[in-house]
Every structure is written in structure tokens, then in C-alpha cells.
Image (cartoon, rainbow, N blue to C red; front, top):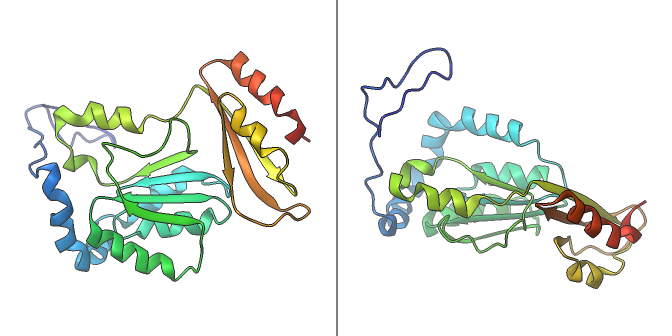
Length: 224
């Protein structure tokens, strides 16, 4: 596989260069990063911090979203996601128990319950289609063999052509009706009802604009 890049106006990988394929078997990556977990934060500060900050900037996180980070590592970025999405749902997965242990220690300092961390693989995401508002992933694709890229991209393709979000304010209302509505996904924050408090949100996704509007109309009681 030969590629040429000139993202900054300078060709940094000419056609005559050869991109190296992933060399570590997928079933060995978890153990490999278990051994790196103790010094990974220092390495990440030197090599990943600028890219991580830029990714957070581009993400434009809005509080109240449902966010999934794949390959969460020691939680450096996930920690910032939880801070910015303090009224949303935040899920982080990684295949390394050692890295997750570091992430759990870091997130425990926030004293927050609106996140979860667990073992998981990008090849088999345990989430439904269109069940999250944002999927975040950094520094993982170099560990994926070229011949498996399509599977990874397919697994992480969760966005639909048309989508909408309805915030649930003050009272939960007829949440059972949301569960029965086609294309609608309910995200609750487990908070007590209170005037003007955001209690959750509904995401509606569809490949058809007409179908999207039909689902929105069936939930019009939640609209102002």
C-alpha cells in the first residue's frame, strides 16, 4: 500500500515510500498495552497532547450528549469528555485491562457517575446503530491490519443522513412512548424531576427526511 500525503503543503510520505502494516496480532495487543500502562501518560504527553487537544476542539461537545470513546487508554481524553459532558452519557472501552485501570483511577477523582469504563473491542461494539451521538477514537488505526480496516470503519459508522435531538426538561413524561417510536433512542440521566432541569434527551435518526419528521411528530408532546 503506497500513499502520498501533503496535508500541510509538504509531501511527507512520497509514493515511493511504503506504509508498514500492523505487526502485532489483535489477540496480543491487550497484553502489550498492559505492560505500557505505567508509563503511557508520559509518552502521551510528549507525542499525543497537541492532537488530543485539537480533537477535543473539533468535536465541539455539547453537554447532554451520548458519547462513546473507543480505545480509551489511560483516560486522558475521556476525562476531558466527561468534564464537558457532565449531564450526558459517557462510555469508554479498551482491550487493555492495565490501561483501563489507569483510566478508572483518573476518572474516580471527578466523583461523577455519568460514565462507564469496560473492556471492549472496536471490532465488536456493543452499541446499537445510531445509539450514540458521538464516537471518539484516537491512536488506534496503526494497530489495525489494512485488510481489516473496512470492518473497523463499518463497525464505527453510526451516523445516519438525517437526525434530530429533543431535550427532556423538568418532567420525564411518557418515556414508554419514546421506546415504542420508530427511529427514536432514549437517553436518561437518572436525575430527579425539577423545573428547568435537563433530565435526558431523545435522538431520532433516519435515512429518510419524511420518516424523521413522522417520528418527531409522534413525540410532539416533548416539543415546546
